[in-house]
Structures are given as structure tokens and as C-alpha cells.
Length: 310
Image (tube, rainbow, N blue to C red; front, top):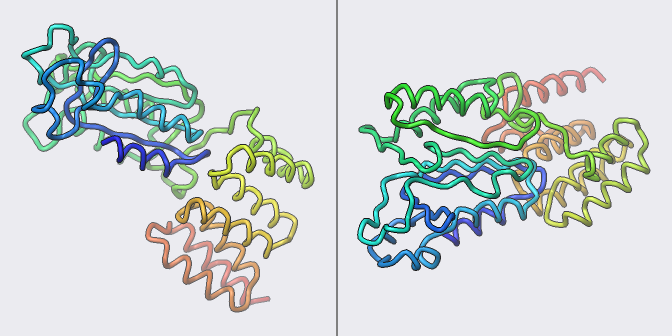
């Protein structure tokens, strides 16, 4: 499980949205929440072994925090009955509130309130997961309202025996399904004002190119693994009319994240603006994007028609 979390953490980057979901056994011991890997229960014979044979949930948040994400969502459906009845004297019911829950840009959701246990239900999914999946598909539903709806639905189904809980320190609204927008626009919140990307963006809007460039260069030094500074450098180059330079910066993005959606869309735009043989490259790239949005395809078609009149 730790290897999977490490791999997950390495794939995150600044400006992204991190989502970690866990369903299974979890216990609270000495103020910490431990997630229990499949097959580990039989190998644990004392509470002291928890730290060596399970995963501290705080470790997950640490991996996400190190990436400098814009938003982190942690969902724990792990408040089952304690599986270690033989030595559970010092273990408490359910999961504890996590100390990291106050970290900026973080939302932590629990299947039930702190210190209580969750129900498995009789279907494929627990009541919590069932309603979580249902409301995640609802369009234009802000994430905090989503978890409120999950709470009401689970509480009603369990006749008050289970009350889901969440804690958040986020700004703006995040949507799992944003009707009328492509997925790149799902998170509508400003960057922190002390972030050089935010400052660079403000200079970009004001057409203060040199000042924007200095801020984006600063961001790339501070976040060498993040594709975000290079994306904004590409935007700046395009605004200055340097289409080929913009494409070079986008290649730096793809070295860090080959599937960076905003950059794929921007590359298509630049290729279309270059025209000529690049039009075919733009269409091929658009067709290769598995989840290419209808809006993006419509934009390409419209631009193609307009270019044919020039």
C-alpha cells in the first residue's frame, strides 16, 4: 500500500487536484488513524505492530502536501468494526479527526462521525460509497454541497445510526461534473495571492509581458517538477505571438505530465493558428485525446472553417 501511495504522490504536481479514496478496515490507536492493507490483519498480533504493518493515514496527506496541490480530497470509508478484538483495549471506536485537516486546500471526508463506526450495508457498496458515487455524477454540484447531500442520504437510510462527516479548508468551488465546461475548468478558484503563478497571471492579463515572464521563471525554479509554470510560459509566448516558442514550452509540460489537459488543448490551438500542415497535426492530436470534450472538437471545427476562408 505504501508503494502505491508513493507512486500516487509522485504523479501529483502543483496546480493539480489530488484525490485519495480508501474503503476497507481502519482503526484508531494513540490518536492516529491506520489503514489496513488486504491480508495484513492475520499478521498483526499487537497494537504496537500497527505502525509497521499498516499505513498511517497522515502519510497520505503528507505525500499530497509535498506536491503543492491546489486542492487535496481525502475520502475515508474506513470506520468499520475493529478487527483486532483480542488486543483492542487501547484502541478507540472509529477514526479520529486528523491533525492535518486544517491544512489549506484540503478536504477530508469520513464515512461517519469521529469515534463512530460505519455500516457495510447489504449491497455491493456501503451506504456511504453508494451515495458518494451517486452525487459525484450530479452536474454543477460543488464538492462541499455534495458531501452534505451524502450525509443527509446516509443518515436517512441508516435511521440515524451513521452520520458522515467532513472537514474542509478550501476556497472556491470544485465540481466533479461541471456542465458546460471541459474538465480542465472544473476547479474554479484563484491561486494563492503570494504564488508567483498568480502574480504572473495578473501581469499576463495586464499585458505586462516582461513582469509576467519573471514571475513564471520564478515559479519554475520553485516548482521544478510541476508542469504549471511551463504551461503559463507557453500561454505568455502565444500572447506575444511566439507560436513556436509556445510549442517548445509545451514540450517541457509534457515531460512532466504527458496528459496535462490544458496544455494538450493549448497545443491544438497553437497548431491551428500556425495553419498549413499543422492543421492535420491538430486534428490528429485532438482525435488521440481519449476524453476530448465536445466543446474542444467544436472549437477545432469552427477554427478550421474560419481558416478555410482566409
